[in-house]
Amino acid sequence: MKSINRVGEKEIEYVKEVLSWGFRASAGYRMTKRLEEAFCEKFGSKYAVTFCNGTATLHIALEAVGVGLGDEVIVPPLTMSATTFGVLHANATPVFADVDPDTFQITAEAIEKCITPRTKAIIVVSLYGLAPDFDKIMAVAKKHNLAVIEDDAQCFLGKYKGRTVGTIGDIASFSFQASKHMTSSEGGMLITDNEELAKKIRCYSCLGYAGVGTNKGKISKTDIQDPEYNRHVSMGWNYRLSEVASAVALAQTERLEELVEIRQQSAKIFDDAIKGNTIIAPQKTGEDYVNAYWAYATKLIDDSITWKQFRDKYLELGGDGIYSAWKLTYQEPFFKNMAMLHREGLLNKTVSYEDGICPVAEALQPKILAFKSNYYDLNVAAAKAEALVKTINYFK
Image 1: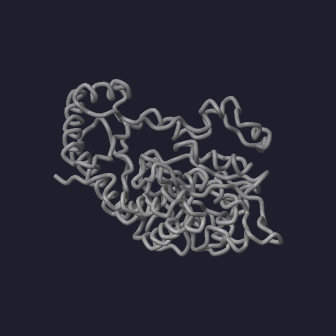
Image 2 (image 1 turned 135 degrees about the horizontal axis):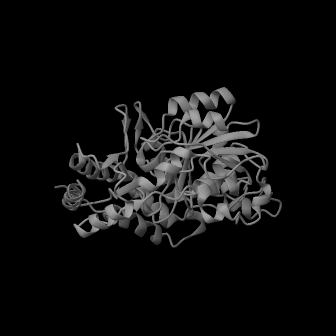
Image 3 (image 1 turned 45 degrees about the vertical axis):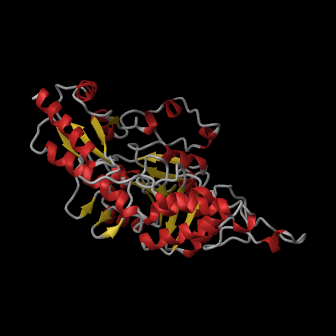
């Protein structure tokens, strides 16, 4: 069976190239520019801006579409809390919309129920590598004049009705954190086809510098040596990605099909292994979707078995650890205790965060079992799938 290296010779070559430049300021955007251009080409996007991580991306995407104090942003509760952190970083109020019990994705119907006069944007997450129903969501957004930001941290080269995930909303966010399809240990990217948004994204992520632009990430030496130069046209943040990280991410972008495909092949091995069972059900992937399989997500459908019983037996029979779903964001301690570094005072008081606001997600979250897909040797994936078959047979 196929095996690949997570990090290969190309990554090492590009890092050595950066090191040979000696971190000269004049070379400080050279590799990053190559990465942005390669990412645009890979996704068919006009503009790409690198970031230090995939949470900063969400913050700046919201700033770029004009989200701020008093505004509401609709988000899914069933995802890593960083999606909501981006809203809080922008001093806005998160509003949680429920999910589909079979696809695990935020739904257009739930989104529309959450819209108020304060709603400014929607963040949709392609959870576990699967897109939500974008056509319905984009129709709701258009009807109410709302910006749509894709959080595609877990979905590289996924497809929705023939379109690449990341090219459907107004802005798309990607993460290069170590668990993702491609990585530079940490890092992120925003892509968009909107020039005005791209200009704002670059400016806001680069300290509000006047001399940066859609395809320019550094101000020139001539400018900064001029005592009359007005550097900052806006408040901004320093969210830039290092050249060393850009070097690794460039190599991984060039290898992206290979890195995504190995996870999809692992997922197929798991999918074939559990066909016809009555214990767990896989995340439902429609015929006109291509799942990128950040993980092979399933849900426990036999109520006589607990999550921990299944996990423990899987480990005993040779499986790896199983990932649970994140606690719903509004059920995390920081939300329950309003420990938001004083931003709790900025939240709109009309928004409720009580248990029961997203009943589908609340029922689903304790039942999700997400199996690893990042097996770079498919022989290992096959062995783990066999352990899963044994586990299912044990509980029959």
